[in-house]
Amino acid sequence: MLDVRRMQVLRAVVGNGSVTGAAAVLGYTPSAVSQQIAALEKEAGAALLERVGRGVRPTAAGLLLTEYADTIGRQVAEAETALADLLAGRTGRLGVRYFATAGAGLVAPAVARLREAHPGVRIELKLTVDPEDPLAEVREGRADLALRVGREGRQDGGVRLLHLLDDPYLAVLPRGHRLAGRRSVRLEELAEEAFVGSEWPGPCLDAQLDACAVVGFRPRFAVQSEDYVTAQGFVAAGLGVSLVPRLGLGSRHPGVVVREVRDPVPVRAIQAVVRETAPAQPALDAFIDALRGAAEAR
Image (cartoon, rainbow, N blue to C red):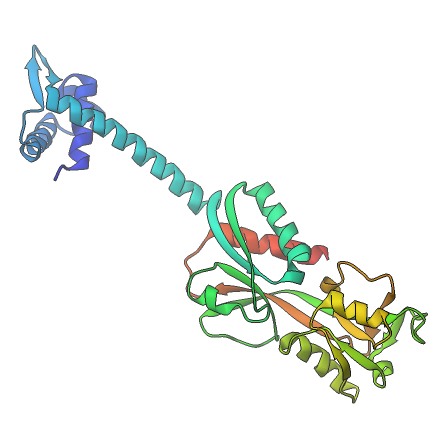
């Protein structure tokens, strides 16, 4: 097998026209250069240089290997530049998983921030089927980061949870409701109301149930929609009231009013999930900073 480093020595000899000239450029002794060329000729099975006066010129085999050495040298330089860009976070590729209501409010502005600061970083975005527990892809290395709704203080093996945002729930009421004229409503004032469900079972629904339990009631669900837009339609039709997180109210039905909830405020925690043992990735760190910036802006 041809030694790539010896090919670069040959390249220097041919480029300088002499062993002595190549030795001066490379910082070797002429004897060391001659030894490297002799070893390369043995590997190649052919003479690579012929003497011409005080210098040398390449044989056909020597010229062939010199041309390949030029190509290899350029490729190595390109590889070094690409590696430096990757390690500095100027380039890279990130796999990101997100759930629907985090898309417009967090992911989109974070991607815009990252592209402005690091245009060479490519982001592969994929909407998760299960918005509350997209950990498998992160654990298995199929994604670099996922957004999820989780409980504060909960730890999951193999991943690191980074808190981004507390997303408060708001009361969605039919127009003309007895509480519609208020600027805010106390949660206990909804105790006797029929509820329109807007969440799948899991941390999102638990956030509502836990807050209601604090003031002594469990919501009586008249309709289960498990979708924020559909829930607003049922509320507008007078089938009940609903609790919807602020990020879930990107569009509002004209037949409802939205009011803040207090004493207590139901809140869901939105977290970023990264692999605990993942090697350092400057591009990933930059995206996490962009997500935090987008969360703070809200």
